[in-house]
Length: 317
Image (cartoon, rainbow, N blue to C red; front, side, top):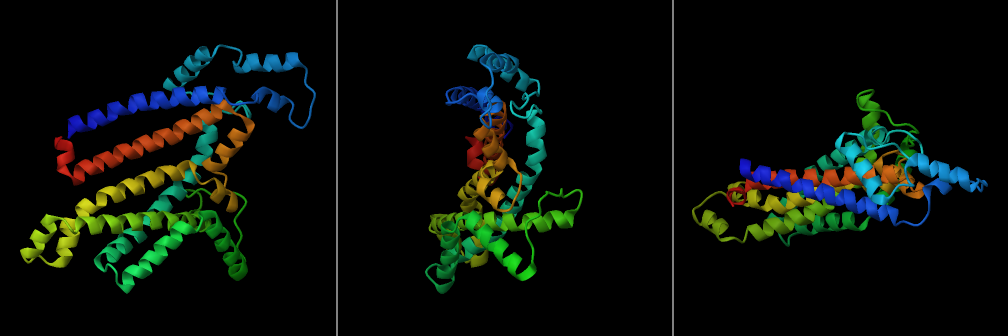
């Protein structure tokens, strides 16, 4: 198990390096100039020498490979640079919004797992019955309904019946847990419903496939109770693809809640992505992409560890 874990950790290094190089080069190929965007915003007429001075100050006059070495060297020292637009450290800008996005992702994941595993199991056990049909309608509706549209419906219902509207400022869980949960539970529900629909469909398909295996028929032939057959023999193997879906969806939520954050007036990582891209803020975009890349890599690493724990054949290989 230790050798397997070390191999998985070592594979992270070239992946992160490749992401860093790719995002750095791709941003330099984007049309537009952030310096002109900043100084000439609103139609202002700024002399060319002022623009050039600002480019020198930001280090944009240097060759691309020198810029990359300087930026990546700072990352190795824990310095992601400063935002070209606001001048504040990138880690500070990301850190001030990460708590919100991370909490919504965790809450949505918890709700999705709480809904998906029981419904997916019931749909598989009662295949082609009224229970299966109802669960399939619920899951397909979750796939068909966009999260932001469901969020708007939730806001309209809360406004109509309770007079509640999304607050203008985010309250940390550590400051006021009740106010924090009352603010974030609704976007988490809107996102978690679609999330649970994907996991429910995967759980149903996976359990149905596993329940047709030879060892399941053998367990039934030995007289093992059906509940034990499903829980002890079926679910352990059926959970492998479900865990993959749950993990990847969680990683996606860290930076993929752009529209949902806009609907609920939340200033999270998704909105910061949009602002940085609109402004052409190279250092901020690079930091955000690396954050998402690290999230996906870490989630995949945890999934691999869970795979090895659930299926000994993986770690023995």
